[in-house]
Length: 334
Image (tube, rainbow, N blue to C red):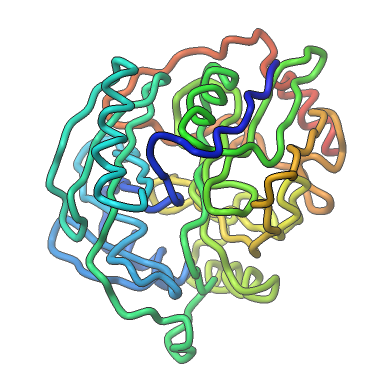
């Protein structure tokens, strides 16, 4: 296990986690779930696609839902770069690494770059989006969990060290990390660009697969309201984990499964970690406060299940026991 030195002046400037593109079988059911329970706003829609954003977001979308007749998947996760020039430099970076690069046209976005990381995660970079009204003070339209902005993704990958090396070479900084059970290897890492604990999280597991994407909410009472609304609309079983409080990040949280099984987190936002002297925080996998400070243990589904990426093969983890056995994981939560 090694923590690379931070790259404070990377070749291109990624600013934040930006948007995620998911396929779903029933657009109407997904629209209802994400607007009424999660609390997102519809920016635009047609018969096959819905573009949604959080209440504080001024960009066209942070979640794109696309109709599919086959298995619901994650098409791509998106990152914003600061300028158009950074897009060109990103293309050069990925080409130099021998990775796939393609320029595409995407509705609601400026010039857009499709790339793939070494683990096979499909990424999308853009520098601009169509500007929409920011609804952060439009209190009468707040619904469900009142999702404010997309904050981060968690991705399961076979080799966390490789992900660490690659993403930190692009300027991501590590805020916290989890050490595997019985071996001195990464079980998980929390990487950030925007100055809070994470924009993207990697945990060891069969992958690459998208474990969840996460939106900030207002407070713990709003998380509970989202659960109440979910129950009222018959989605009570969609409340998969929580409410509880995380160890890493320290935020209060609740996880939902949408009508297609995609996992979305609502959580109260967390601390700043942007100063140059901030060192990564270590967590041991067996710590009772690592996964949560309080709350019920994770369900087996939360540990094992995740969303496949479109057209991406899944590999087994590099470590024989990447974190710990499932039984040990659940035992430490008890």
